[in-house]
Length: 506
Image 1 (cartoon, rainbow, N blue to C red):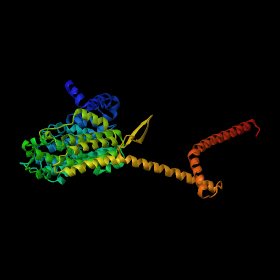
Image 2: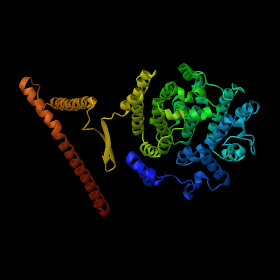
Image 3: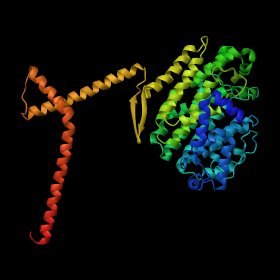
């Protein structure tokens, strides 16, 4: 970015400029080339160094979050990504005939154990992962067997699913058309949901996350679908120009379109935006599952790895929602906004607030004549409800001296704060009454006071209440002092006994 761009940002988006500066100064990034990291990144090994280069070549945005995973997770996820990138490159290549493509998709998982195998017939931009697949294979077999099992299994399932869809393609329709929402969900499951399942398996196998994470198949799938559907929605213009089309017919046909090419026709912009709003609606149904998944994570580097793409996805959906520019090209979120999101996405509470913030923005952009007005309102409300249920906004989190606590925001106008305060006071009064009743029962049991009624009983209860509130600290102090004196007496007796014993007087 040039100086002029920064000046414009300082005026238009000052918080984003501040975020870029903070990101540059304070954000720590893991250096996989550092000598202290080589024991887990193996960057000093030529074949693994080449694999890290493959990652940079094929994924600019994903590469950074992969490298920041701690320990051996970074290298493991790097290899997982490259294996799936090879699979995806085969699927995307329209120049490879199905007679070659389909068997290869179904068998690529076996090539992971076939030294020296490469594929030189691809013309895709990421063909390097196929041309030099032997290097990927060489590094794959050095992974711990527990990781190899997860990666090979996902590769097998994904390859079979991709082949099933690729088999439906025809010379007239090189990419199989997705017809129903169920087809759309299944396709996204094969190309992204399985990635989520595989990552959960790797996180669990590493021991950095709890074992049950590997069993969260529904939530893992939803994480993948949220990201994949966002990419499919955003890439409409590029995909149509390249002859691909992943928007389900069930969505765009109801708005009078006969093909996806018609979606980018400037004369039909309004109808195309209605179809686009339904695509956003479909993506939003995976938001709360994704938030549920993130609450289960305990490792900070794993959480960052999952949360950063998730907040980028919800921000991208907001930026492209009802935006005519997405019908003419690729719309991206601003660099400063990205930096701000990365700095904020460090815990489930703040991530849920980010989701809520962008859901509110999407809701504010819904047109009154949008056919999906009610459904979009409900979808956005569900995200806001999730955030408020799990992390009520009237409760503030903070602390000093390393101690973290929560409190009710004194400036809040939230009606729940009043209710919460009343319930808290009732709980305190109930606890005081229980202590008072217990003290009175003990005094009566010891015969110190007698059963009384009327005014005398009320006076005794007031006295007991004062004693319960005021005497307890003194009783604790007396108890501590008594304990210390008793301990000193015992120790003194032991010393006297030892002196007398060794002096022969005993």
